[in-house]
Length: 169
Image (cartoon, rainbow, N blue to C red; front, side, top):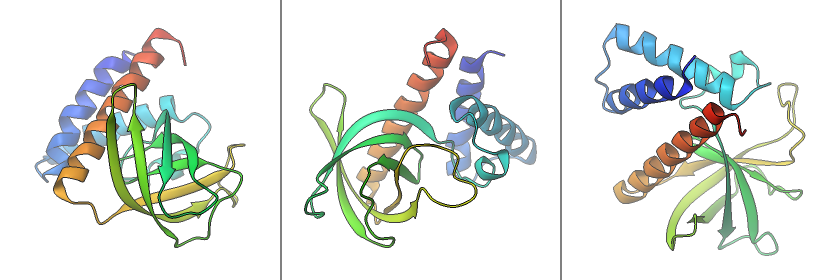
């Protein structure tokens, strides 16, 4: 299976889906592509979990910082979706805590600032990773921030599928 082709088709359909423009056939194809990408990019996560998500979680390694969390100032983002991210940390903060994230992208001086809320900790019967941390959902994004997150997501997804294709993951 050509993961690059699946990614390209998913990206094309995802843009249409964001605007509510998918036909029923395209929605079925989007669902199939979403499933393939989820299996390849998040192995070991049960399909019943990945099928409930609004977008594929993409493995990534980006540093980020918080402007309002006292001693928890910097962390590593280990996956990203259109709606949120997972942060690796041994000190997750309370559920419902609102934070302002500053995400530094690559070697560029590109910075994305976004509001988020802690919605999960890595506990429970369906959590099957050994990473400790917390899941955050993006909140209150203006149009520009939403565009920046979408671009970061698409870049991360393209990078992850390139790694899959080359066998470097």
